[in-house]
Image (cartoon, rainbow, N blue to C red; front, top):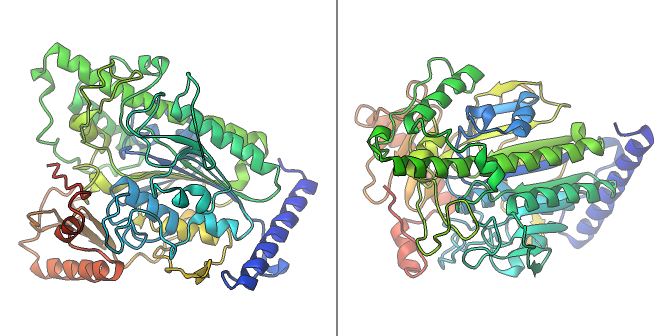
Length: 545
């Protein structure tokens, strides 16, 4: 527990830091005016944890057989949301998460490549402010550990976007053991470092996060930690002792594991008792038709994938222990989510032919296991189907959230920035560093966290690589590049998008497409063919299905 003296000192120092910073920003004309002491109450620390390429059912608390006791405990003592959406791909989600804007407004209409078009520049622009910049301007200490992936150039690295401290991958990630594949590097602050021989990125990312917390606690100000994991993104690499826990557990086959998860999801309350499951993906082979060698290979791939999530959870457990040690756990809001659904990508590199899971290997867990990860939904990362955009969302904050809560109100990645801003009592600026700032798109989740109903979004929208989707109430529209066949689903009766109602509901289809187009025009979405034409050498058109 925080002592009364320390609590008073923290509160006073936080207020002093806040007033000093806002006075400075006010003088410079690039921030809000300070509030008086009487209008301020104690503000919590905030820890925002992001997993990479992890599906809806991959945590124990969301139906998995993978051991995730730390996150399961946060869920059991906090809130689980069951209708939370990301932006379907890594860079767009991260940019949206950090700014409270839709990806195209945050200059991440594609990925980090500069496509030479407004909204497709591949880095967070000057007319967007990050959570870290906002909170630092309002008296918070800030730190990031993990994968950045929203701006390759040094002028766009985390330390230039509001983070006092940074450890991790400033470019992309996809690396566990050293030496890393490709051009990946790891940095402390702005300096690239050479990792030690026993380096494993998941452990290093978690342990630096704990170290940052220990440092920031001493500063007697509230703190914001962004913990952005590489795990469980490919390549499949994990420690031998973690892989052993799962070896052989997946020889039951794809459909058996998926169905077991589905039943557990209903038992846990993640899904209703009558919730459907989508048909198994047609590209998933019959398990019994595989050779013993193929079965063993698939078992190994999923065992490594599970081990990667297990290791991530172990480190999150150490972070929670650090918060508890310093008396900060109850005064910290912890949020956990994933950047997209499980991926069917297979970039296995035959030139990196070490055994899967070990240093020097580069393997993926492939489509059949991704179909399991996204249970009970269909499809994968990249697309606007539920399997690509729906994520676990766990919030732990005992001062606000009732233990063991569930909520099924639709929410979106744009809501996180708005929620944190309100929680931290941070006034969102109209200008910052002499730049006019785009207003946030999100709606606060604090009413949801308090167990209330909030006024829903008028609509939620997606576009990535020409793939379109929108949700208006319970109606969901999906249309895929390049054919653009209209699909319309009523999620109240068909949560797994199995029955296309477009032909039977032409007026509803027209309205939802019209609203998507208004959103697209407002946020700067360009036709995908136009993006490719603008930068044909860098546009990475990938038709996955």
